[in-house]
Image 1: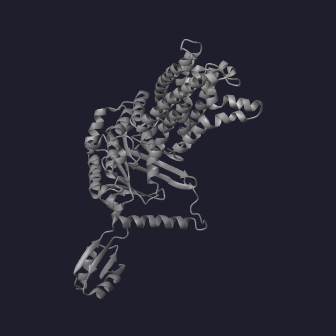
Image 2: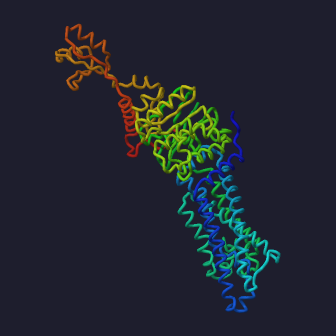
Image 3: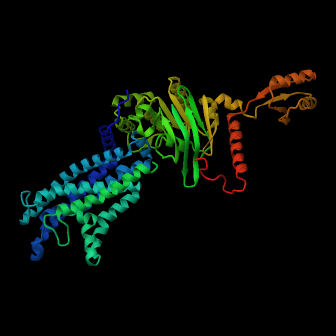
Length: 261
Length: 314
């Protein structure tokens, strides 16, 4: 009668959990709307003001990253989803019910991670492509659009989906570590949006290094076609960003196995 | 079958569970009795592998909970009916639990039916009354048709109808040969629900015996007698070595049986109007027991203002 439970069972269970709460729908809608909305807004503004843009700025203009600029906001929505996926288990006490059904704790965390990674990658990539095409439609009015066939562009647009998925995992890893919704969201917003621009103010060579390697500064290089000075390469940056959440997740996993639930 | 051996758990410097050993057997309802803070919930969390013990083991059907291949098929546990995400519907909640152990969605409908909450299966849990939540929690425990069931304070906050339903349900489950382990701080509730009692105080085992024997063993068992010749009867009983006190116009004879008191009255040709056994309630028996445990603590460590050294029996 007893069938040994497997990873497949836990994945199905986590999928049901994810799609059966409203917060998933709302954070996804927010992610799609802000990523596309701000991308369109910034592309439209760029197109309208293009005549006033100086030649020096025109030479470094990146049509792809302009249309994907909304990701700066969309990342927060999807990171919040990542947080909620596990923090609500702690805030509701549901974690005790979940761990009673799945006592192998790392299996539970792995299933949550894979489901979140899959859904954020799919929705994030589609969103990135929609934002790209809508943005280019505006930019094409003044002839400054780019195309998927141009060098590095396809990588950057797929990169939008990759970056959004990474942001979701960043939220999940932090929340798995902190086990508290508000605290995890505060730190996610700080780490991905608020603090990164300020790292520019840090002095000297070590300041430049901190700026280069800091979370979204590193990760968002995957969405750009032309790199600024003092930035990592697209894939190098994305690898650094991935290391950020992987390390946090590893600590969270270690503690999950040791702490009382 | 649940086997707990030398279980000890401390939180900071507070000993929650202190070298606890007991066995919960199938076929009967076993009450896990103790005042609030006695370590009942902690013990249950330790059995379920949610907390790590400092020392000792807890086995369910011969295995540590964490190594059960299909936990929901072996154990159904309800710790707190509110340990659920209120944003989910009852069916989604049960379905996610069922899927995690490879249980079919047909079984979800069955347990909804069994606990009488089919009509609210599509409603979000946050709108549920405590009684409904409790039924949902019990539905979850039944998903894998397990041989072992654990309930932590299941009747807390329920109305009389809900209490009666849960009481009958637990007896029904035990009647099917399952192991039913239910905690409570309500002694009166356990008196009518449990066949066997495991009593804890301050994390220590105080008693492990049938409910009947537990009440029987209480030293407060006494006989009450009413007589128009109370003064003479009192003297006659004291002469025989009985301890007699006057309570509410009755003579209360400690550690005596009705026959003994009746015989004494007959020998002295004294009239008796009422004669009955004053059975200790479970409440009184329990307070008697925990009183002893407290006295033991202070006598054992008279010079230590903080009580017993922590974890000394670990």
